Length: 372
Image (tube, rainbow, N blue to C red; front, side, top):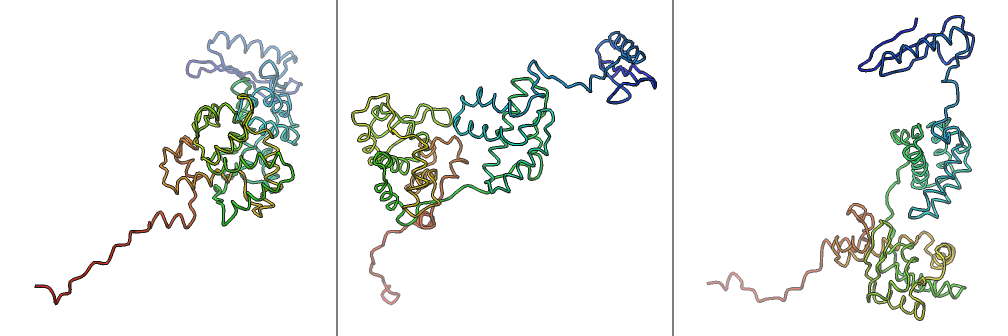
């Protein structure tokens, strides 16, 4: 039998299918909630009448079109593409995220309708990436980007869906966690070997640019993208400093530059207009030269460009720079993040813990026998 029940301040009307009903239905009953009893009664009478006549259609079996564009009926690949066009260009690192979104749009899960995707689809994707040998941080970035797309759909497009990545995070090993931050420091004569490798590069322009870029990164702790963004006018404003107006943390940064790095920048930009970029090769060319030529020739194939940032900040700490000064130089907003970059060598650790003491001159001692 049908029913009309008051729950709190609302009325729930439940219509039940008669045995004579022949059409498809999700279940034998169908409910709706109303704020007014009259509305609930009116709906119940109309629904029961349609059920008895046999022309009632169960709305739960019809594809749901949430919002004007019906996003849940579209493939996730369409959402990834739309997000890449509309949202990604506003971000730092837009180029890398765009490449990631294009890659993910080709994956098997992206060919499914958004409303059909469940947590297990992304578990399979995660496991496949792990089987391919991808780093935990890479897989984590992939899943976090997918999560951002879902959050965009939910909050900006007002699509009535849940975020499967949010559910995945609640599982014990749902989203891979990085095993730990890198602590790679320059060893032995690697700095000299890298300098020699830069000198021996086949392309003169690439060699000339890297001769300035290497000491800049090694002495200042700047990120590669920040260094590549420097314009000539930024260098000429104040001796020994460069102000990056739009750094990674969305705030201007005052970066102190060593004498050798500053001299290299002035030489490289001599005669160039103020609005031109200091480095004339692209970031891709710089990274490719480092990855496939410089570090190979220098026989340190595991050394990454970003390790130079670790090296620079660790050297500054070893020279006694305080945390506030280091954070101003590095651009980090929290001490916890900065600490990942301060990796003292065993020798620096011992020197800081047990500094050399001054040698005290021998003084004449008085024996017990000479005392009065």
